[in-house]
Figure 1 (cartoon, rainbow, N blue to C red):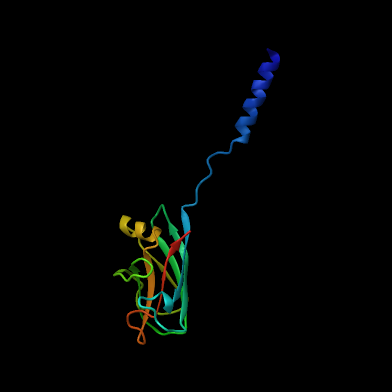
Figure 2 (cartoon, helix red, strand yellow):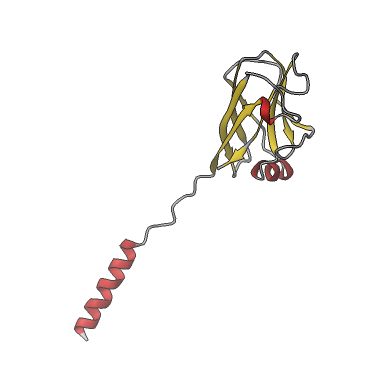
Length: 143
């Protein structure tokens, strides 16, 4: 009986200290995109390139991005809705300050924009005088 009690207490002690408390899950996920003329619809011949890096906070629903580009002079830039290989309408304006790198933070995304972002249905499109419909583009992926 004494051995059973000691064994039970030892097992309880081991389980109590071996089990970690629920670890907090980081609500931020990485967002990336590679911008190129080949991603435009239809494809655009250009030497311009760009990238998007950032985070999406699944709790606050806020998207924070850094957009870079090279080899072009932007005239407009937006976030559009559309799958890879398709064009879609503008869902978020990035403003009219064209600098690289450029940082942009949204207000909380609504449920539709959040679902579209997580599904890879949102893309960054940078327009130029040479290619008014868009010179470089890339669909954002969430990791």
